[in-house]
Length: 403
Image (cartoon, rainbow, N blue to C red; front, side, top):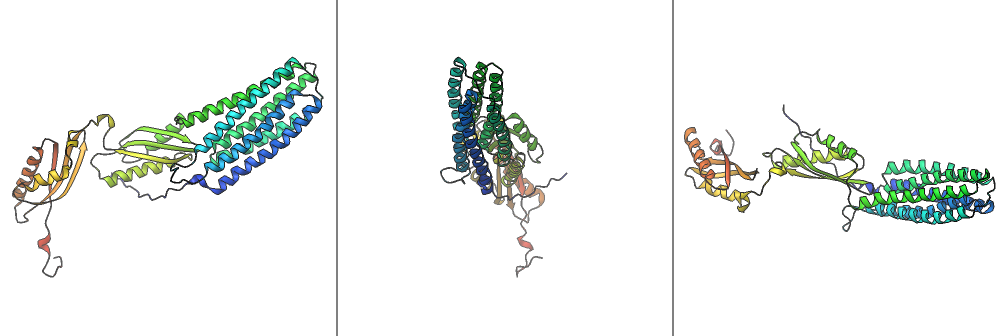
């Protein structure tokens, strides 16, 4: 069954610089910063007035969020700058560095809060009942902010915004723990509020370590998730002309996924045909996942494990060698086309020769056989396929019209 190969001409666009994405992400960060400022003031004032160490600890967490919001805002805008001569792969690493900065600050914040919590365990104090109201407000606002941030982060594929969204989720959870601690204090167990504050600090530190680990792995070009690799491999199986594929690699750069791979195609096709298959592979993988923004395809005529260093590499110009040997055979007028195939470390030749048009078929075939034997006698040539080219110049009339 004949196969058709569509011609693709999709321009490469820097989709990471969409201004609407930058505006949406910036708006999320600014809303989060406003809410964090409000919560840090409310929880701090109420915590000081009621003597709630858990609420004061949670207020310090919210105040620290303002700094991470600033980091997220700058990282988001810098990472969405268009590619330039000094950054041909874009500025996606700014998101990774921003995520790492957010993670570092979370760890530092967790350590500070843990120190305060230990002091509260040693010296417990009573807490006023209305401190519970501040904790409830904090849970509601932070949970809403998490859902808002994570939705936009996934829409614009921003890793640093997603990290900041999870930071908001930790704020919600720590406020729940603060609520429990205040309740235990009111129930006559004041030391337990300090333990709840310590739990908050450990949770904040753990989130920072987890985000930092992921950011470091990204900086070290760690491979993407196995599920994404599976999607890419499945997409490859739907492309005609791909004999096999190997060395499929994918890594993250901010919200982008960069892919490179080797694709094996039939060894006797033309360069343009091989390029067309490579384009089909690129387009198919770009559509396999919205995070994939760049695909580099290397075309192989055979499996790499069969590709030893060939002896034909000692020949600087194999085409010139073929033409020289062929025209030296009696009866060959010219050599019009030469194709050199390097397969399994050997040189295979296809060529067209022109002979006198008045020769009989058997005579022309004999000349072609002589050319084939002369070429196969060359040490570097393994196989030769000779074609006779028809000369139709005698069909033209004197005035240039074709009969």
